[in-house]
Length: 206
Image 1: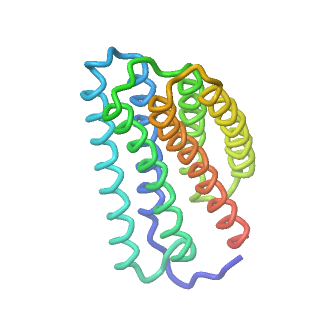
Image 2: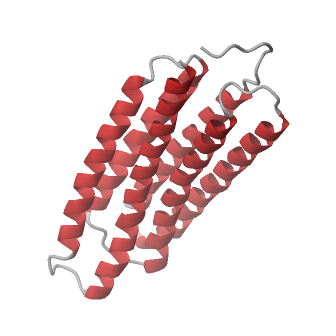
């Protein structure tokens, strides 16, 4: 266990929790985007963009806090990496929503809803785990579950790709939908990268 001779700045914990909670709202809205009429998608996507802006704000607050703090609760590079990877998830979610609106595909495959369901569960699991960073305890189940969810997401993604290239869709629609499912897959991968970072922190600080 690392010896700390002075108290460390603890506001990082609240900021990580805020960032992860924001992902719950963003993935919830992403699910809503898939169910509303085509003409209402832009409004929902705008709310997701608001979440993305809020996430950026939290990330920048973490960076500013990091630059002004002498003693940090764990390694600076790990704080930076965790903040950045949480931000990555939001970026991929926002990109998927933006593409759905820009491409205007009238009917979205059911597999996209399955991808989003996995993201919603990963977001909830991540947000539930972030407050436990303070004690660096009881986190192993978190990264194991996120890894399991990422494997589930991979399986759904492969099925999506197979369906897209089955001849069911015209070539242009395939190109559009593949970009959407690719961004959702990247979001699932990004959640796993967050969990991997937490695991690294726990191992280093134990």
